[in-house]
Amino acid sequence: MAKYLDPKADLTFKKVFGEHKELLISFLNALLPLPEGKEIVELEYLPSEMVPVNPDKKDTIVDVRCKDKDGRQFLVEMQMYWTDAFRQRVLLNTCKAYSLPADRGEKYSELKPVYTLSLVNDIAFPELHDDFYHCYMMTHSKYKEYTIDDIEMIFVELPKFKPNTVLDKKMAVLWLRFLTEVNEHTREVDKELLADDNVAKAVSLVEESAYSDAELWAIDRYWDSVSRERTIMSEKFLKGEAKGHAEGLAEGRAEGRAEGLAEGEKNGIIKTALNMKKEGLTISLIAKMTGLSEEEINKL
Image (cartoon, rainbow, N blue to C red):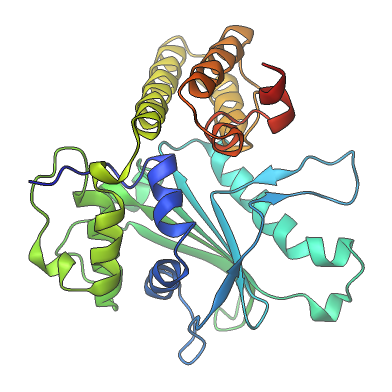
C-alpha cells in the first residue's frame, strides 16, 4: 500500500507545480478567475526570485512564478499560517511583478496582467465565515462593474474548504481535495481524484517512495520549522507581543531570508543547512528550503 507526503510542504508543492507545466496549467485554470476564452494554454517558468534593478530595493522570492504566451504573469504561493504581514507581502510581490518590466525599460503600455494565487493553510478571514475563496481586484468605488483587472490577488483558505463546496469548476474541487485530503495519513486515495489524469499524476508525485532519504529528511525539517514558528507565534501572542515578532517570522521565511528572525533562530537555520549538506542535498535545494543564499551555504 502506497504512503503519501503532504503536498502542502515546500518541497512537495514545488515538485508538483514547479516542475510539471501541465499540472500547473490545469491548477491555475481551475482556481483563477480567468475570463472565458482566456484560459492558459501554455506557459514558461520564470525565476522565483524577482531581483529589482535598483540594488537598494529588496528582491522577493515566491514558490512558483510563470507567464503564458500572452505575457500574463502568475505567482503561486503556499503559506502554512496567516499574518497581516503575509497579506502585505503578497501585495508587494504582485506589484513588483507588474512593475519589473517597466523598471527594465519596457513601455508602460506593454505591461501585462499579474495574477497571484495564495493558498493559505490557516483561517485568514474569520469574519467571512464559510467563504474560503477571496478574489481582490481594483474596482470603481461607485460603479462596481468597472474594474482594472491588471492586478488580481486570490486567497484560498484551505481549512474552510469542504468537498461538497459549490464551485463553478469541477477541477477546482478536485485540486483542492488533492491539497486537503492527501497527506502522510492517507493510505488510499479516492478514485474520483485518480480518475483525472493530471490529479492522478500529482498524487503519484507525492508518494513517499518517489523521494530520497535526504529529501524525506528535509521535509521533516520543514514541518519542524512550521511547528516551531507556530509555537513561537502563539507564545508571543499570549504575552501580548505577537504582532512585531510574527511579522518578522512571516517576512523572514517568505522572503527566503533570515532577516527578522532572532539570532538563535538563524543559528538553527545554519545548523539545518549543514545537516542538509551532510545528507547530500544540492546547494540550490538547500537554499530554497532554508532561505540562505547559495554563497552562504557554500561557505558553511
